Length: 290
Image (cartoon, rainbow, N blue to C red; front, side, top):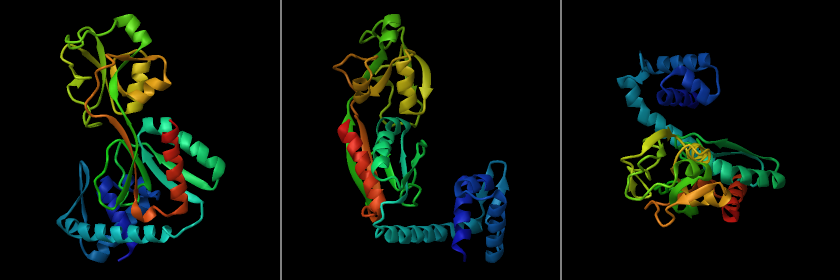
């Protein structure tokens, strides 16, 4: 069985469409369809059914999925082990993080890195989806949650209080909210459901009951931008206020129980790869300097 055909099978299974798989693999959609048909012919079974919601696995497809994923793990492990002995400070390094951490820390780290190691190319992804390091979707992840997988190297980069913030413009227009009134007469910006585990039905411990939720956003960067624009109150990590004099901490003594954390994560097989190591050091230095 051809490993490239198995990669296509897995990409189709994860994307649910030939087009999505083609975009992920950076090949033509016709090629994906042809290689998938070849694999089905080789196995003598249909692997997918076409539905209104996309392609779904048949019973035969489900039976080969575990084997295909095992082949993928072996291939990725072989690739990582071979790269671990690469001493050249050159080549691509895939980094995934949130948009806010990218703007505030990772992009400045890349800027400093390029001056010293111009042959290192950083591929930066700020998708809200957590990319899988085990499948080499990324080499380095900078995340706000600590992962638990045993084969990953984890390093804490930062830890900040999460407080309630507003812009000077907002406070001049709306005044400061009164504790115990549930944000009566005030506009609130929140994360969309599922974006973070830190959010509940309170802000800085105050119930939201009387407030107007005027925006639900899917990233820290958008939330901070919304608050800076004077459009609403919102919870932000404290480091943002240190950089922006326009932001004012409301109720300075009150904070969210769970802090805002930043963790750097990479697979242990890549820890000694030269190009990965210099990117790790540059990102860590950017957080230390901040």
